[in-house]
Amino acid sequence: MSERTLTVETRMPTDPAEPNLPPQDDSAAGENICPQCSGSGRLDGQPCPTCDGTGKVMEGIGGG
Image (tube, one colour):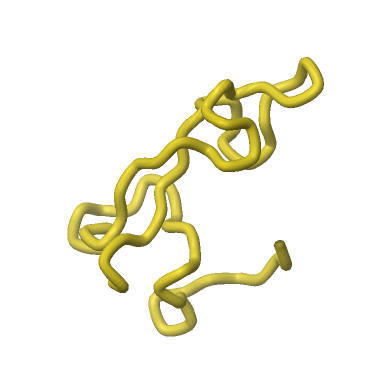
């Protein structure tokens, strides 16, 4: 996945939602199982870098 700075203006519907957004900004996002660690929160004995060890990620839903 390429690293780029996401803003409201540059965010695409398929981009992951930024964590800790106010409700009005992430209303088109929902919690999902982390695709990298399959929800375990761990990769190779370390916290998963994708979900920071939570096993969950916020993703855009409904094309929003």
